[in-house]
Structure formats: C-alpha cells, structure tokens
Image (spheres, rainbow, N blue to C red):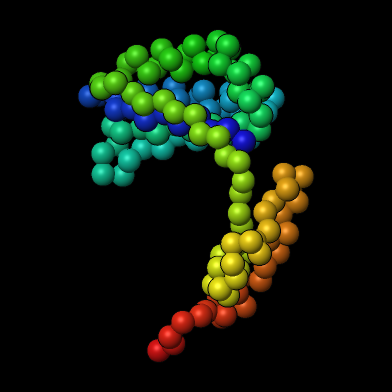
Length: 141
C-alpha cells in the first residue's frame, strides 16, 4: 500500500472553498481503480491547516493517478497555498492489528508476531476486545 499525504495552509478567507475543492477530489479519488480511501482534514486549533490523504493498493495505480487530470487539479490547489505545501508518499509494507498489541502485552518476542499476508483476511480483528483488555500485565492497583 502507498499513501499520498498533502499538508497545506489555506490563504485567509479561502479555507472553505479549498476544503470543498479537496473534498470533491477525494470523492473522485474513491472512484478510481486502486484507491482504497481518500480523506480531507482540518486542524482543530487552526482550520487553515489542511491535510489531504489517499491510500492506494499498488504503485501502478498510483502512477496512473499521478498522470491524471485529477492530480493536475490537486497540484493547482497546492499552488493556492499560503505557504509552500508538503507532499509525501509513504510506502506501507506491513500492517499489524489488535493481535500485535495482545502479543506485546503478553510479553511475546517480536519473532512470534503474525502479520497480515495481504490476502485480505485479518484474523487479528477477531480478538475479543473485552477479554483482551482484561489480560493486562504489570502491576495492578
């Protein structure tokens, strides 16, 4: 999985229109082959700080999007930023679920961890959270 992360500061009095434009691009991204999700966030203590992210299933699909008109529109929005924006691509090589936390709390070594194989199944999501929380280790009050 590859994630696109964009951070920008909206010019004064343009925050709402910039957020609306980013939300529109996020909706369109969700329709593209390989886009797993797209989100727009504003910082709670400074709504002019905007965060836009997309998650892609494969580099090939991301590269296709980077050649698209939609990405051209995203770049045009970046050019409106009050300060130089930051655009980064993060490669996610593995995902660990609740099972990772359970094993760590039980003191199991790193070699004992199981990871998602990428086949879409997530056995760690079947952990019973209430009983998991009841198995805390360490000093008890």
